[in-house]
Image 1 (tube, rainbow, N blue to C red):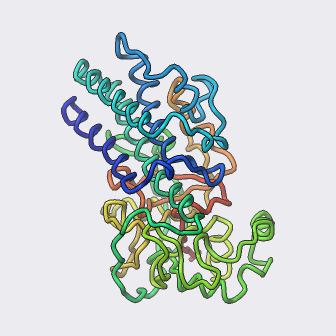
Image 2 (image 1 turned 90 degrees about the vertical axis):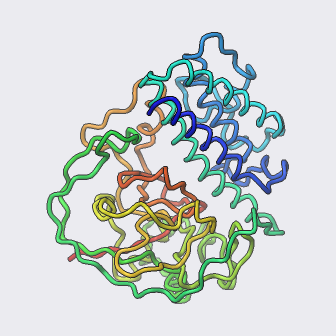
Image 3 (image 1 turned 120 degrees about the vertical axis):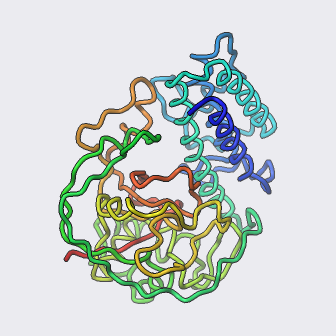
Length: 410
């Protein structure tokens, strides 16, 4: 990518992060509602730290960091870079102020512009910038998921913004679409950007199976709740059953106690029974699949299904910021609406090699005890997705826009 289009994309992505924060008061951007949530202000600063640390400091002659302690405050998990402020305590950072963080972003943006203008043909620089932009897009989604948890735990249940009401429609019939199986290829192919964990491309053996035509709906999940799904230990993995009891789970995150309404980024709204169920953990997804008489799909099964399909769906650009009911029949909702839990552990592909240096900490060191999710969500930027994109979380995570697609053996 040449310097001019790259600078244009840089400007667009950086502006999109700030646009997501419109409507937030400075007080909103400081709150940390649980250790997995980072304050909005921290996300805005950390994404700037990424460009400052990995591009400006080593590549722009004479560059001076904006603040000598920001490297400590806004490093996330790069131990080879240096020490960092503890993640569970990020909500204690009343300083720097939001205005100071915005000034930090302007400082970084100005110097990144100089760097791109000075080295328009530097391919390595171009790769690092695109990596940084994809990193920022990940944090854009986290800004939304994290602020939803912050506002959703506020007794006032304030809206982030006045989001549009999704179209009212009945749920399409859930069908299982047969896949014959055989040798398939998964993993990133081509010259476009991909994270290192999407490589190398390799062959897998798919057994004959069938995929559900759409994501599981709120109405279908409500049947599971009313049938006593959260009180039947035979449906649950051992760790999942322990979590149900220790946390008192009895419905998806953000549902009201009577299961008639749920908190959305547009405020408290009636549950649309035709829309995909959201904010469920892997444990809940697995238990629901067992209750239904099905299973969760594997990572290769979902990537194989996604490869020939258009990259469209209910993504962040739609503005709904919540899942909406399937609009078509056949295999649908492959991209957007909800991240779909798979049964596959987050592990390296055969021949995987992480990036060199500190950037090798980006993905590889997390390949243990987490599960893969596929397909993007209503909070994911469209330009951030690929058929090979691998998201991953611990099996008890619920605050992400995570849902369920079913599969069956043939």
